[in-house]
Structures are given as C-alpha cells and as structure tokens.
Image (cartoon, rainbow, N blue to C red; front, side):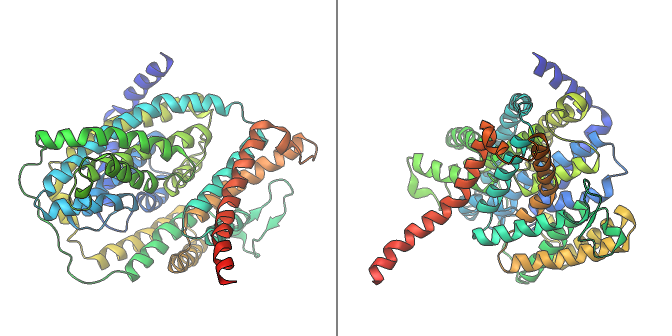
Length: 502
C-alpha cells in the first residue's frame, strides 16, 4: 500500500504541465537519437549534462533524461527495420528479421510489432521497477562500507569482463578510468595527486568532461571515420500500420517472454541490453514452430528482441536508484547527473528525494504512452531524419559538445581536457578497447576508494574485514570467479591444441 501511495504521489509530480512538457521533449529527443545511426542514449545524455545543470530543476531534468533513455531504446528499431543499420547496438538482433520483413513489403507490420511490443514490455518492466526498487533499497540498508566496496568491485569486474572482446583491453580501459579518478586533492591527506601543477586540476577532472569526451567526441570521430558516403537503400513504409490477427497471435507471447528476459538481465552489472535481445531472439527461434523463417522475416524475431530491449532499460534503473550502482554506460551517465545535482542515489533516495524518484518512475509510464503515439503515426517524420547529411550531423555534435564543455565552468582547461580525452577515446575505439569501463571506473573509482578507507578505519586497519563479513566475502568471491573463469576456459581450450601439436 505504501508503494501505491508513493506512486500516486509520483504521478502528481509527473503530471504537472511543466514535467509533462519535459517528458514529451525527452522522448522526442530520445526517439530521434535512436533513429540516427551511431548516436546512442549515453552520448545524448552526455551532451545534455553541461546545459542542464544550472537551468533545469532536478526532478524535471531526470524526467527528461528518462524520456531520452526510453526514447532511444524505442527509436533504434526504425533504422534497423528500414535501413538494415541499427541505430543502437541493442537493435542489432532486430535487423535480422526486421529488415527481411521490410524487403517483403511488411515494414509497417515490423514497425508496429516493435512499437507495441516496446510499449507492453516497457510498461510491465516499469511496474516491476516500481515494486523491486524500494525492496532493493531496503536491502541496501544492510550494507556497510565492506559490502559496498565488494559490490563496486563486482560492478567493475563485470563491466570489464563482459563489455568488449578482450579481457585485457577491458582492464586497460578500466585502469584508465580509475587513474583519471585519482587526479585532484586527496580528501583525507589534503595532498595533490597527479595535478601536474595545473590549479584547475586540483578539484579533479570533471566527470561530465570525460563522459562527453569519450562518448561524444571520441565516438563521433570514430563513427565519422568509418562513414561510407554511399547511398543507402531505404525500405518504403506502405499499408496499414496495424497488425493482423495472425500477427497478434504470433507476437504477444514473444513480447511477454522478452520482458521476462530483459528486465532481470538489465538489472545485472554489465547485463545491458545487447545480451537480453540476442537471448530473446535465440529463445524465440528455439520455441518457434517455424524456425526456418528466422532470418527471412519472422515477426517473432522482431517482437521478442524489441520487448527485451525496452524491458532491460527499466532493469538498469533498479540497481542505479537502489544502490547507486551503474550497470551500463548510460547508467553511469545518469549517476553523473545525480552527482551534478548533488543527489546521492541509494537507500536514502526514496526517503530524502521522494518527489524526484517517484516522479521519475511515474514519468516512465507516461513516457511509454508518448512513445507509442510518436512511433506509430509519425514514423514518416523519423524516416526523414535519415536524410540529414552525416557530415553535418557529426560536425553539429562536435560543436555542441565543445560549447557545452566550455559553459560548464567557463574554463579553457576543460576544452583541452575534452579534446585530449576525445582523441584518446577515438584511439580506444580504433584498437577495439571499450570505453564503458573507463567511464564506469572514473565514476565508481573515487567511491570505491572512499568505502575501502572507511572499512579499514572501522576495522582499525585489519584487511580481513572484507572476508569476515559474509555478504562482502560472497561478492568478492563472485568478482574473482568473473575474472578467473575466462582465463581458465582459455587455458583449457589451449591445452588440447598443445597436446595435438606435441
């Protein structure tokens, strides 16, 4: 009953005219971001951070951010289906059958099942978030410094191990982010660390600058360098944007199964949205009576992954709101936004910032309705965005990123840091090094150090405190398995090869 009352209060906040406008703006921007290939929600939020800090009320800002996040997860299906070019990595699975349906003249039905499935999954997942997040917050009250330290270690190891093709490259990216987090004055000793004699670095490197540099400048330079100036064939949208009875029959179960797969995996560290979408696709192919249709235009291959995609977005918010733990690059940017507004996510968020957190959750229900309206009738408008010349788009992002970084502190040093970090981010992408561990490491690193020192202070310098607390010991064991298991599997694969060679 308490949760229902809190949710009703959240709707009273989210349904105010101002917040409705911010929600509508957020989902519109998010849909546009999702439609445009190469631009994701993390990049969009990184660009918005510098211009919202001193202008928008925190509750309104997060309602807009949530709209951008949900909208980007919706919009990626449009280019996947019509252009065979996923606007988001999470929409790759949708291209397998979505574009095949478009080539068969069923683009309207593919877009419809994606939009309706996203609405169904997003609404159910938001309802799960409504009841799961407060329970996780109560669980977080049992955590002390040793448990929080161990939980952050798990988050760092999973992000490093899962994102990217190489564990060593993931670790290198993570260490880069942790090193950036060490710059500035040590809060306990008062000594400057790695400031290089630059006064502007004594307060540390602004997380927003690094996020914009890696996710906006670096990513844009990389995408622009890979852009091919050839004409891309765009499938036409014709016929009714509604599903036949047969399409409904084949879609509703994948929508529900995708939701069940997407929400829990999205809540896991580094679960993200790519894993549940492919898992949903494989599940539907295995359960289908016509597996031969997959890859050739099976509507289940669009319905399931799109539902999993949007359900995972709500799952990502559960540990972020309850523990202050980012499980993806987008969640890391949202955590940066919380820090920018002086709000600490975690157990206290539901008591000290009830308007913000419940207004945010309520806005997700409203945003889902907005997105259903935007994605079906206005699909022609979103298709026209694909006509924007890519060089103009990339140049606009770089200019906007530069202006936003400068207005953050009106500091030229920030611009130098922005472009140095941006070029490093570009180099990381060229060599196949994921940037998400660097962003997460920069944000979690200082918190990790703080909890580590607190735990040692409580135990009077005894490091066994991390092993004598059962929860902390269990979490550290999980982190060890995540790091050692891939190495053990790699050695096991090499052993038979070495024997055969001998």
